[in-house]
Length: 265
Image (cartoon, rainbow, N blue to C red; front, side, top):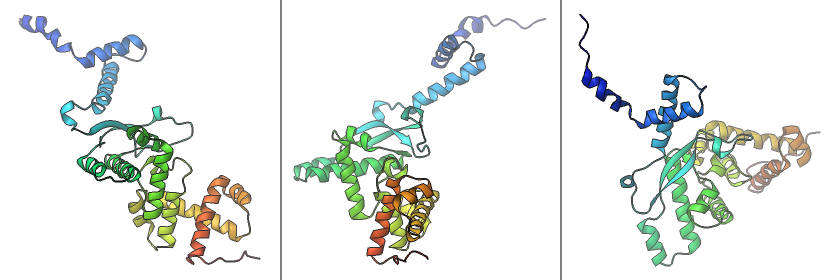
């Protein structure tokens, strides 16, 4: 004798299928009919919902003065022909305005000093959450120009010999000299080990070794009597990059950290 049919489950069971995941899977299947069967469509829908959930924050999770912003993952460096749409984005909760910002305004702190303090805080908060902000991100968040942001942060790095963790420095996006200079100076001026330099400049050991290696190769070419163009050709890099490292080399020689050896005969 067969099992007794469960008429209640038969009538009300379909209500369990009325989910957002099934709705998304159905839409994907309708738009892309050759993508796969129900299991593939269900998995695709689940992945879509995971991304959506990660990029949303309920109102109660944000405090007054905070903002939700997308940063590019620390673990997703740039590559040729790679656009922002092709990168891993991480939702960030940033403190756009804090009581100390208001106090600084009331205390007549210079606008550039207030802007720099905010930019530094946002960069460090993004880094702590596993992502990086660009100068353009900061310019949009702080309602100013990206060139102004770049100047303030670069000047801060020069005067404090520290690296601000942002895309221009950690991912080496742009032609900035500052972080290269700081890494090389920490090695030859302060005598620090590459691993320590990496911790202090938010760079991996591999990145530190790459910068130091490039500097040493550029310096070697100069000591062999090669000009900037010849060095760039020999090392398969741009003349601009060679000029940056040559400027660091001159600075170290002026500080008598490196001996200006004559070219070999």
